[in-house]
Amino acid sequence: MNKVIIISIAILFFSCQENYTPKPRGFFKISFPEKEFQQYTGNCPFTFQFPTYSKIDTLEKRCFFNLQFPDFKATLHVSYFPVSENLYEHTEESRTLAYKHSIKANAISEQPFIDQKNSVFGLVYDYEGTTATALQFYLTDSTNHFFRGALYFNTEVNDSLIPITNFLQEDIKYLIESFRWKEKLAQQKTVIPKLPQADVPQQRILEPQKAK
Image 1: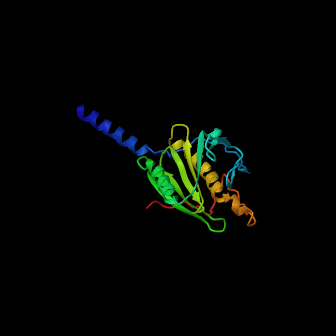
Image 2: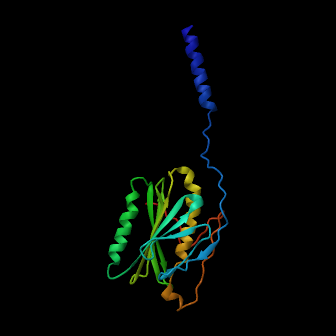
């Protein structure tokens, strides 16, 4: 009798194993707004284009502000510093702040940004994994200006934020590509980069790099 029970349990166990099919990971469907941008016209030595579905909250320190994305509970924290033979200090501080998230990040990739014509040079830190920050970067003309941005979520971070992260990263990368120093604008014709599409990945200057 005991042998019959054991054999029956074994058959049931293996039959359940054979019928099990793991389900692919899914995400809630999110309705994203159409990508539209406007020009930043603040009293700062730079300008750029930012999404119409975001808003700027100015801070007390000049050219420090937060670019808020209320619908996505995310904030791009922006800071600006005039450079006076201390560019290395600013770049190293940015690197330190970026790698504070290395414990939780699966990988951090560094993407150089070079716009020789407009004297805009920088580095973009891209994150893989569930980190509080989705992207950080700095831009400089290498002599007079230093601009830094860090995108953070104002909510618990998990895999369900991946579609939002991808959407906002496109916006921030477009901001970077449209970035200009005002002192350079009078010297040449401004060329605005192509708008990113919400449903079609763009192959532009800033492309994801594989983590080594």
